[in-house]
Image 1 (spheres, rainbow, N blue to C red):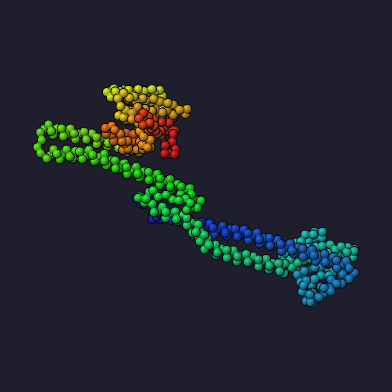
Image 2: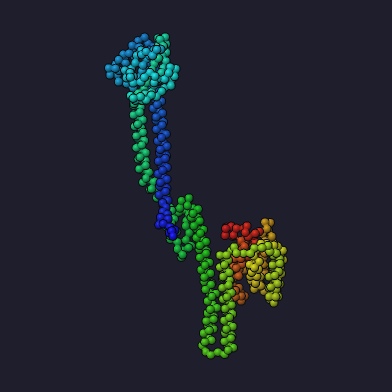
Length: 484
């Protein structure tokens, strides 16, 4: 049986280089590439300039020879120059090699340094005015063939074969190339430390940013980063972190409020039952008294069970938002079913309960009825006798459906509206309502499961309206959190 467990190399975490290292390497590469391109361009321009200067030097020599041969003693003067060069007396023309030949190629006069160095076949043919580069055993030469324009030379068919020894030119090019290589090596050695210094200095705002975030603790969630303290490129990140801190602070406050209210909701009935049990056990009781104590405890049990049931529903709503049975619902028929259920309670309280709903939407039948029941129950609780609770609907142009529950009760002040759907949030009122503060939170959770939302409008002393917003189809609509 083969062992399929991964090897240590496979399970070991992959090491990644730091951002500073990567930026430094890119910085060094960019310097080297830039220097190489500039140095190469400069080198080729220098080589081209040296080659052009050699061609110009040849042209100047050709012009000088033509001018000299146009004089009566010109040929003798050239022969004397060649003789002096052969004796080593004239070192100024060592780099210039010339030869005058006739039509048959017979040498009229030539430079001693040209003899046996460059063959006549290496020179360009007659009529070709371009210079030709020749590489021989004696070195590199730049060669030209020029026509002599003086009457004697034209009559005899003489032509000038002239060459330029490129030894000095090549030496100068090699010196340039060596300097460029040395400069490149120096640039590379300079780029290594300077790149790390520049990158470290450039990333210092990121270190400051990390240190600022490290100082934020659970007791300092109100801390905000100042964007002006960081470079412009980091402003979007700072703004995003500040926005995240706002959400975290708000969530932390809601969680603290939720935990405190939950403890209070569970502690009160438990304390009541403990107190009743202690009193009952303090002395002998009659069976009837024990029954009353048990009945009172049963009421507290029911209250605890209701709170736990609602909390479980909210927990499932947070984690099982896709486990719904969506279908096309007739809103009018569904609302009438719920209204019939509450009609007896409304009549006993002297409240008029009416509905004007004509719409259809996609939703889960059971959850819709639960949300609507919570709204109607709240409306009946806070509406005095002689008031009215109305359910009505409206449809948008894109197929959205809104179902509203309006009452004529005491109303809610505007500062409470943003928190109305929070868990365990209850508005102080003069009524003796003992709700848990979870009814509207359940309504909000149900609407989020439908990818819709719920909103409330109220006017103190005139009543409150809560509206359920259903999208055209929940599966085609982004959840509220994603829409933001």
